Length: 285
Image (cartoon, rainbow, N blue to C red; front, side):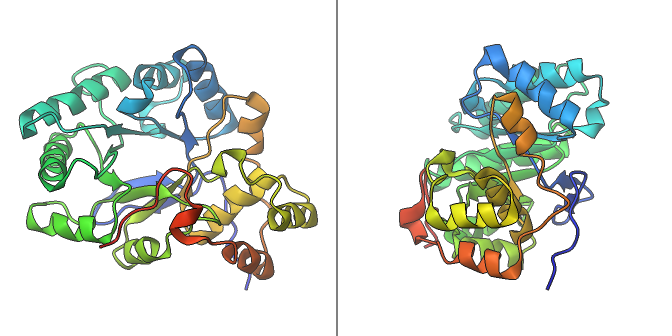
């Protein structure tokens, strides 16, 4: 059965929210400050309207500068960042988040569209502290939506004990054919949690995989385009990353064609479970 026609302008609704998230994002992990502004500007000129940064990436200010220089209205670009670690109290974690907002969107009215907890690794109390800080950010309008990253089923369920906002709007996890994380992806789908896919291109480590190469040849598209299109047809929000202008262009040329049912099944068959992760697979217990 053909998938619905997709377009670069497509968005998805976030749960219990009026906010919608663009279905294709632009990642800036490891994008140095010296090139990040130029890369983001190029992406925005091509029609990307969703940029994903983080405190850990050390380029939040550059992302904000690119949006300011683009001439686009602030409300037309969806900006995400992430808190790296708890500050030791809800107030200190909140202040860490405010510092990020002010780097990205200076001024009293500055906001980000999505603020995530980068990792669950600090333990239950740290997770609670950061979530309460994000809820305050949401209440004050400094974030339009809030979510998590690398969270498994147990960690999202645990939130029910302390969260006023549940479910989280987004869970950003590693996703590609070799690491499909089916348990957490299905759980998020049941609760209408939007799933973002980081490392959708597997950092080019699988560019010569025989199955991927065969499908790429069959559809006349690059391996990267096949992987991004795969994510889109799975209902995920992929976040491809590049600082090479031609690759940035290639990574958004994923519309006007589709992967057939057989091609999707072949890619589905590549799943290696947790062993297929190049960054990390979530823990679901």
